[in-house]
Image (cartoon, rainbow over all chains, first blue to last red):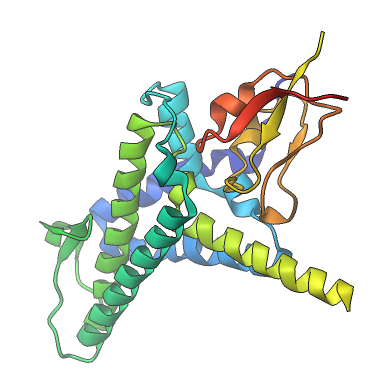
Length: 199
Length: 65
């Protein structure tokens, strides 16, 4: 029996639109914060991974491209990539880079640095992105955050695409920092909950 | 003849829910967002989840009733 599709099965359209919008106006990158806060809020408030399980548009996009469109070799992911060392290590690295980006944004807000109209891919390659910036009446820092955040989103999409091709379609889910973090929150919540019951 | 059923390595599961989506019997759930669980009574051993699992940690194993 084929399960009937729900509205949230189409969220991949939102994810794809988000990536495309960043090519036209970088300020749309701010919308990506939704992909940060919604999973966290769900895991904190409800104690589950409903975001990963149902609503993650990026996961759906990989499932579609790797599955339906056959862009995946569908091989097993190497053991080290699914180990906790790698998952927690990647989470730490990802957040270190994220805070570095926030620091750079702060420097632009404070006027200590000039706005850099570039997107940094894989934390290394600086790609000129001035054509997606048409000015803002707010502080330059607002635009700097958009460039920085879009860099994070595009970098993780590229990594996800690479592992999608090499391994299974949703290989990104194995080491996705948001997934690792929400699972940690759920685990922590469960521990504290069971301790409360014991008392 | 003993039937094979999906068995999940709980320690390695990332709770992404890919298996839940493909299960034709809705036999898999991810309670509390920690790891996926198979309802062995519902599992028909089709192996779709094992194929889908991005971490490849679902094995089809013969389990005694």
